Amino acid sequence: MFIQLREKSVNVLTHAAVGELAVLVDWLEENDSINGVALLSGKPGGFVYGADINEFETLKTAEDVADHMEMVHGLFNRIAGLGVPSCVGIDGIALGGGLEISLAFDRLFVTASPKTKLGFPEINLGIMPGYGGTGRAYRRVGTKSVLDMMLTGRPVGSKDALNSGLADEMVDSADDLAAAMRRWMLGCRRVKPAHIQRDTMADTDAIKEAREIYLRRARADHTPAPFAIIDHVETYGHDAAAMSAGEIGIFPQLMVGAASKNLRRVYYLTDAVRKSARGESGIERLHVVGAGVMGGDIAAVGAMSGLEVSLTDMNAAAIDSAIDRATKLFERRLKSPDKIAAALGRLHADQQGHGVADADLIIEAVAEKLAVKQAVFQALEAASKPGAILATNTSAIPLEDIANTLKSPERLIGLHFFNPVPVLPLVEVIWSKFSDQEMVNRGMQFAGRIGKMPIRCKSVPGFLVNRALLPYIFKAIAAVAAGQSADLIDESLVDFGMPMGPVELADQIGLDVCLDVGVVLGIAPAVKDLLAGKCAAGTIGRKSGSGFYNWDGNRPIRPRQPADAASMDAIAKSMLAPMIDECQKAVDEGVVDSPDSADAGMLFGIGFPGFRGGPLNWAKL
Image 1 (cartoon, helix red, strand yellow):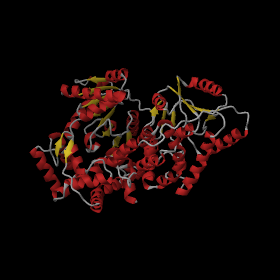
Image 2: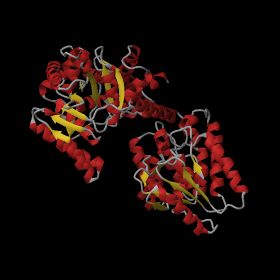
Image 3: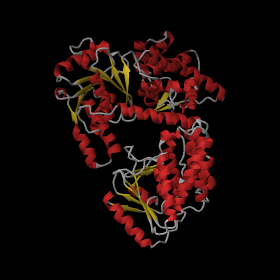
C-alpha cells in the first residue's frame, strides 16, 4: 500500500485520507488471500507529517473531538488486528499521527537518511498523541523514553529510534525499503509477531522526575498538557492497550482548552511568518560592520547558514572575540568537524573593511548613536556596489534620520535582530518612506534564509517590539521608583508566563541602553532620573554586576517575596497594560499590518507566553 495525497505537498492524515484508508482496511479484512500488508509513502523523502491541523478546527466541541478519535482508534486497532504480518517503511518525516499509524503495524523499517525523523510534537500544540500512540510507543520503548518523546516534542533520528526499540530495522536508503520489507514478510510465513511490553509497570522514578521538572517550569492551569501526559502514563503504566484507549478521555478536553487554542494560533502565526520569507534574496555575501555581541553574532549566524561573511571593526580584539564566540556556537550547533571548519572558513576577519565592495548585503551594528550611524552609512554607500542593500540593526532610531544623509536613501532598510541573536528568532524588517520595497522584500527573504522569523515594520521610534516593550519596562521602573518591590513585580510577571520580569529584563539589557532608548522614545522624569542616577554610579545591570539587583554571574540575586495570586495577577495586568496599548497603536498606525503581526512580533521577539496567544489575543479574551 502507498499513502500519497496528490493535493498536498506532503502527506498528512486528512479526514478524507482516513476515510479512504478505512475502505482499504475493509477490503483487507474481507480478502483471505492476503499474506501480509506493507505501507510506504508515495511521496519521496517524507512519510506522514501528522494529522491535518486545519481540519481539527472543524471539531468545535469535546464531543466532536472524541467522536473523531473513536473512529480513528477503531481503524488503527483494526490495522493492528489484521491476522497477517504487517510492516511500514519510513523514509523522512513520521510525526504525530504519522508515527501513530506506523505503530499500528507489526514492524517499523526506517532508512538511515538524516532526514528520517520520528516523534510526537503534539505538546507544542498543547495536546498529546491521540490516535493510540501513547500506549503503542510505551509498549515499545518504556516509561522514560515515551515521556521524553511526548514531553519534549523532539523527534528522534533513525539510529536512536532503532536503539530505543521504536523502530525494528534500518536500511541504507529508500531504495532498500521495499526489498527488506518483502524479505521480512516472507520470513514470517503468516505468523503474526507478538509484541512484548517493555515495562510491565510504569517506572515511578521516571514519572517522579518528569513531574518535578514540570512543576519547576510551568503551572498546570497555564499548560495542562505536560501534566496530563505524566498522569496518563502513571495511570495506565500497567497496560499499554488501556493507555491507548485512555487517550479518548483526556485529549478532547486538552484540544478545546484555551492553552491548546492559543498554541495552535502560534502555530498558524509561525507558518504565516515563514511563508512571508520565502523566495530567493540573491544574497550570498554579507558584510557586517561592528564586531560587538550583536554584530559578531549576526555574522556567525550568517556563516552558519552558508553565506560568505566578512566582519569588520576598528578594534581587532573585538573581531577575535566574535570569532571565538562563533567557534563555540558552531561546535554546539553543527557538531560535525567538517561542517564547523566550513562555517569558520566562510567567516572572514576584515578589519580594513575590504569585504564591503563585494557584499550583497551590508549590516551595520555599531553604537546606538545617530551621528555615528550616519557617518558609517555615508562611507558604506560610497564603498559598496550599486544594488547592495544597506541595513541598520538599530533598535529604535527611525530610518529616515539615518537615510537623510545618503545619496540613495532607497537602499537603506532596517534589520533589527534580538539578543541573543542565535537564540531569538525574530527579525524586524524595517521600511521607511524612502525604502525600495524590493530591498525590503529581499531583507525578508534573507531573514528566512538564515532561519529567522521576519515581520515587516514601518519606521517609527522603537518599531514594534521596543515600542511595546520599553513602556512595559518603564512602567515597572516607575513602580520601583514609587516604592514597589522589584522582586514582587518580576515574580508576578513570571507567574503570568513571561520568561523573566521587566525589572530583571532591564538589568539584562543594561540600564544605560534603557536610558538611551528611553530618551529616543520619551520617558517620565522619575524614570529618567532613576536610570541616570544608576548609570552615573556605574550600576548599569548584569554587565556591571549590579543594577536593580546584585548579580552573581548571569543570575540575579533576588529576595523572594511571597504574595497571593490575586495581587500578583493585578500587578501583571497593570504592568502589561502599556504593552497592550502600544501593540494596538502599532496596528492602528500601520506600523505592522495586522494584530496577528503584532502578536507574532511579541511572541517571537520577547517570549510572550505562547499559551496566551500573544498580547492582543490575550487582551481580547
